[in-house]
Length: 289
Ligand SMILES: [Fe+2]
Image (cartoon, rainbow, N blue to C red):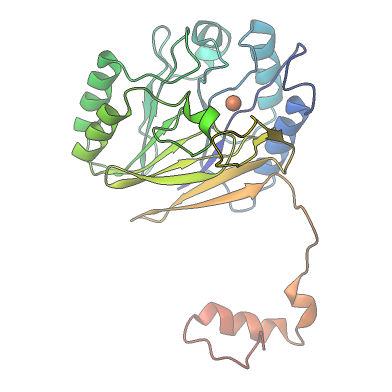
């Protein structure tokens, strides 16, 4: 199963910090085009929060309009810039899994990997939360099946090293980590929020952060650094389940920089392909010199 993760879309209809230097609506449309064009077909798209910049009904209407061009099923999670009540009222009916009220947590059972989506937002906070009722929900949900599981959320449960971002990650991360440890079928935890590809260990598994489809956070591990956003290439992540593990790739929405097709440097691509596809051993002095 191939899962595409997009995050921190920040769709907006009014002026704000984001709009001053990036067109997030346009970059989301580029993400939709990129996903639709993938010949290795994704099975599902997960959008891990900050779907809109201000959480208004107008912004969710625009989000729905842009996403309507997507030809792969998509499931949504809220972020700190979203408004769960408005999101659910605007879009909830479109997806049978989404609860109509309360936290927007749910389970997708349709794939070889179980996908558990956990709402980590609190309407009053930019930081993430994992209160007792969501802990009980996650514990019960993970206890219900030993199938390999991917856990998706907006806030990462670890410090990225970017000090001003780390002020707004999940408060009760130790309790979340204890739940994950009790359920080793959770094979990867995916998140967003930081606007940069970052990884860490979590329980017995891996936790990853997806870049934004719009603007990125500059990585500066100095705790006196300025909060700096960049327009380095927007990207998505591909999480491929091989049957025993996830393999995750970060991919800019479009090809960037110079490209060089190695086939143009080969005299016999048919022969070279045969050698490459046969697999190791792969002697030096052969098709790649
Ligand atoms: Fe964001």
